[in-house]
Image (cartoon, rainbow, N blue to C red; front, side, top):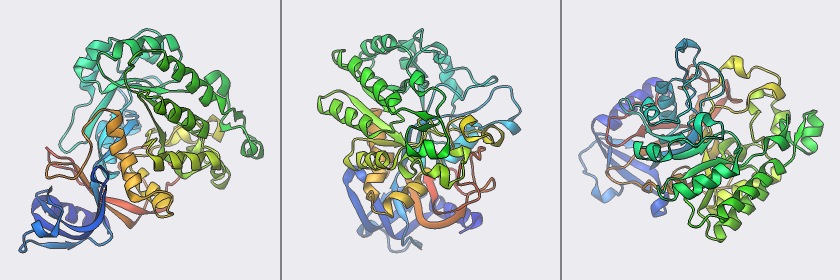
Length: 448
């Protein structure tokens, strides 16, 4: 199905009564995974049972297609520049919205600190900065994280109360947490606002200039190693601070990559601490040997680095048990920025458009996760972390139509993001979002 048939399908789904026959319905909130019929009326889900569908409306064979609630991305970089030639911009808000919809995401958490460098938006550390993310026709809902510290420097607190009142979804320190004193002060203050903190447990002094975790693969590849304690020691220290604060606000730990880190999170949760965690989608489908298989592809240069095979399996088990969520951590780099030797490339890769099809292929089709477990980690779990209503399928809900078998080639022509920073560029994938509906305003097509 090329772009024209996709546009035609989108028009039929949004502009008239349609009976989708034999689709697979996934609703983690209601624990529904069944083949059924769906009635769409001008884009809205009017019924998800055959008995409620009029007999005289057009029918589309949806065999093999999946209908599920809109996905929620906990954290992504916008990457938009200020005062720059947009032809050379990493991303615009328009392209970011299109990429999110093409990936099935109807809500996107936006990190307060754009990628490092001159000419970018300032850090979102003042209430007026929240106006930088207006919604256009059919855009996903933006969930802006405010900076915990002025300039994202980890020192001076931002006006937390004003930012909370202005609509920040929570407070984030995108760079590794520099000051535990600042974290403790935030925990004491923000429990009054009931806003979550988004923190990265990482020790740059231990990590040094490494680009892969210490072990056999770093040695084989000739890359400087990073000790696992760069993550686990930083996380243990942070959890001790959280334990010391009575009735702390929710804390979400981003970018988890170690089995030991997951054990620490599970222990904290068992104690009743309001702590949640997520890993990124690439840490679930690739392990460190992929750097050799992909011939030192700089798009696999991540921070934290790709995990060992054992740690990857532990992270998948964390998704299976409901202790871990999934984020894209979308980093929209330009081609020039990433075309460097592996160890010198900036860490991160784009992900909004590729996460669902590749996670489905690597985890659901292999039996590592059920379809409900994957969809829950991409929708229900993130909503709980942010104290949002659980995504579910109702007549007034966001929804996604996904074809796990639809082949397409990842290229500049098919990607909606302006960033080509992915190891799957010019490769053919199976799995494509056919349509994303954002309730309340007309939805844009996800077709190129």
